[in-house]
Length: 350
Image (tube, rainbow, N blue to C red):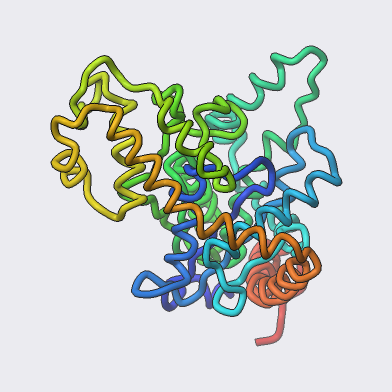
């Protein structure tokens, strides 16, 4: 039992929501990590990426819109550089092992842990603030599904943005509890958060992360925004009353400038010291213009490639279906081990 619990080599898994338009924070904090996990020196032995349509059903949604957004997200991932021949890219709803494992892992998940989840509290308060709003049980339980997504593949690493740290800690605790109770069966994964750009902030409120739900339209740069719109948003970014392009540190009052420095660092592939040296004495106007130009250059190849891919939904569907076949081949044996360990299936011959 659990022969694969001690994985040889690196296996990464990450999921991405198909709802909403993907913004610069999604691209820097997650999507670029996906491509790094597939390519070059940072490549894992196995890279698995899932578009989590089941997670999207935990809030009010339109079924037809969900399908369209799923294709949008698939096209963005492929435009960013994911290659279905070198990774496993699939739609969560096509692999039923995820939902069965969610139920089984509920046996080792504490109600108190779920009740403390930051995103659960925020989304519940948002829903309850609307007159007559319905708060589904799936919104409370979806961190278990998130854990099942990763643990089903015995992934060793989870590339995420900083805002997902708590969810990864919960899935680690679930794996530990399962192994303590039923024997070494699951891998306890590690999160991988980028050193730069882990938390891109709203351009109009640099104390809050960039978001398609809670953020401002003017403060959110979308991957598919046209160049002039990107430049306009960066030009209008909130800063402080000073002129120095430098980091202020915690409580330094320069959150807006720090956010723009981080964005420029990622777009250019340089360190913050280089940015500060280049713009010493330049003032904020020239600096914002440079950030806008750099972000346009950074995102244009993805936007242009996206337009080509999105025009062929049948090909996107083909890629997702092929990925689901590969995903089931990987997670089926893990689920069989879990069922056997828990005593909910007959013993298998060895």
